[in-house]
Image (cartoon, rainbow, N blue to C red):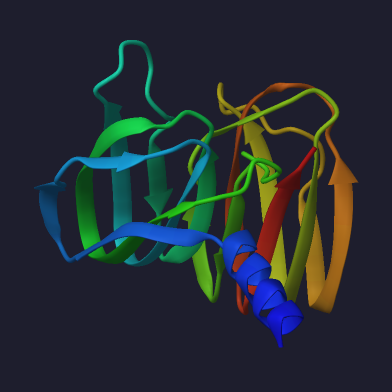
Length: 190
């Protein structure tokens, strides 16, 4: 029995622990400050036209990259540094944002998920040697662009159901333009 309780405690510690969450609609909002140890994960679920989340910190220096999403969808990103943060949220639609603690082995690279939509993801920083894994049901096309809006390689396309991976390799700032008639997921990986 003690062994079972110990295992359940370990499993509970390995799972992300919620710190705070925010919900809203078409509005501009500044959240209350929250304290979180690093690394931490911001997850969003958005239904609407446009979502922008600016992340600020009490600490000197840059805080975290903003979330800027056109169209409905889900996503997540990890912020390596802990501290006291607050967010400025600009939304044309409804959103749920969740802040969770993560374990030190978590990736700071984003994941993008959605359904039937046409949208652009937020800009993300990718390290040298990176790749992305994608899966979808329906007709799916994801075109990768660098931060200067230059297309990088050929679009990733799925007709029907399937999954694949692409190696990009070059470090830099990137975003995806996505067109989908069904559910999809893009994971940015090192």
